[in-house]
Figure 1 (cartoon, rainbow, N blue to C red):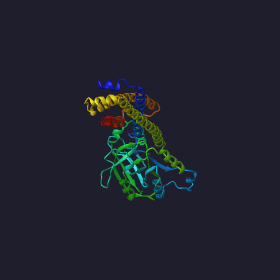
Figure 2: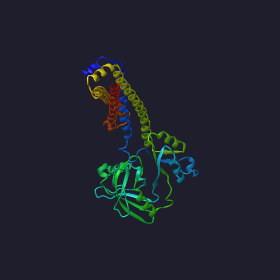
Figure 3: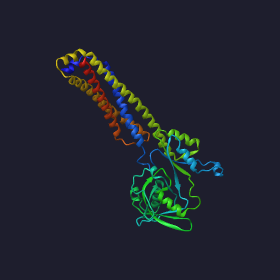
Figure 4: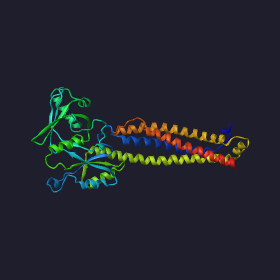
Amino acid sequence: MIKNLLFKYQEKRQLVIALIGALLGITFLISSVHYLHKINEYGEDSEILGKNTLILQKKVTSASTMGLTKTDFSEKEISKMKLEPFVEDVKPVISNNFRVWFETNDPYVPTFKSDVFIQAVSKEFLDVKSEKWHWKEGERFVPMIMPRDFLVMLNTFMNASGIPQVSDDLAMKLKFRLRISDGQKEEWVDTKIIGFTNEIASILVPENFMEYATKKFAQGDPGKITQIMVAGKEGEFGKLETYMNVHGLESKNSQVVVSRLKSIVGTLFAVILVISIVAVIASGLVLIQYMQLVLSHNKYEVRTLLRLGMHPKLISKTFFRYFLFVFLLVLTAGFGFFVLLKYFVDEIFQTGGIYMNEQISIMAFSSIFLTFIIFTLASYRTAKNEVFTLFNK
């Protein structure tokens, strides 16, 4: 009865406009939050490097071939790069300057031997989900991260030898060993694979092992740094790429492509997110304004109900519940449109060769919950203040 008295004969045009704006805003808000989260996650399951991390080296030119320019990094250059506003951190990639021999050491596979190149990088730059990534002198096994190309070469050798090839899981169970030497003395160490990388062409070992081997078997200058790892700030890859071009730096193409993709698409969805937030806020304000308009048009009815003994809290709750129900319908419809839009957007990404986890992001649900809470508090406060203002007059 109270609802009919207060809402039945009200002009609905402003309400409809506000609901349409809220529906569009909420749909794009959920979509932008969802895809921003997915874009940031893209490639993380297959990358051994940390987020927004590139391995850089100086481009080899004719001048560097003739010895006129250097291709290694000085401590001054690394320190200067750390000061750039778009760079979070820079660390050197330590390479071996001693001989390293790799071979299988397992009774279940044939002997495979090869000279190899090993490197060590700072642990905080790696996205290695393993508690085995550590080593100290005296431990039996040295953990290593294997380049996937090396495993392909190993499988090619096994196939040519008429021996069954090994999967990733099997390779991580096999035993290998490294021989490190300086040409006069040598040492054998057992090693096991704990992960694979498509980003780095060398075998990775813990920094402690590289320090130990360098100290014991180093040949020549152990401090020469030819590669560095750079962690760029979120959404600022364009600045880092410009810096690379200006200073003659390069990185593996796949790393650049993924970082550029995440930066461009992330920026696009960030813009959509800002527009969506503005649209949701604007439509929410229009809904609040409509509530105030309805209360203004119903001053006589509200005052009559108050004089008849109805508590102002009951009247304010009537307004609050009405608009909360309306907003819940809009949220539900917005989520439905998001699911429909997500189907087509995922298809577009997959057609373009970008495969992301299709599960709805927890951030999308969080944005719905946060929007609902904010509107609930705003509408409750508005209804309460307006009714109590009439009550006190």
